[in-house]
Length: 72
Image (cartoon, rainbow, N blue to C red; front, side, top):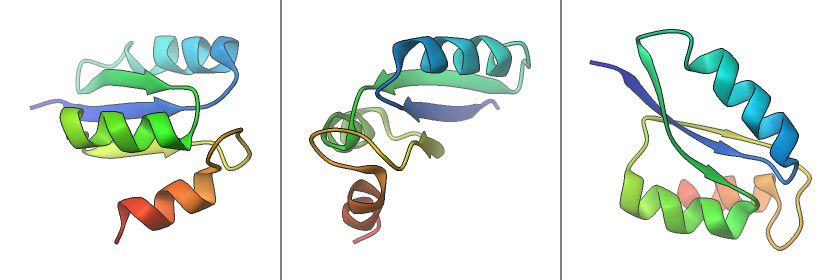
């Protein structure tokens, strides 16, 4: 069973590169990508990832605030 990962970063090029590196491994499945913390909250509710890799500094809702909301 693959580990389901949601990538969250406001830099599309960084997300794309990280997704490429992660998907080399058969045991990792990148199930979604978000541009900011609010998108991460919305996607996490529908995609139910096992792991969320999130940037700290992003527009709309930063990674710290989004993580706080996700863990409540």
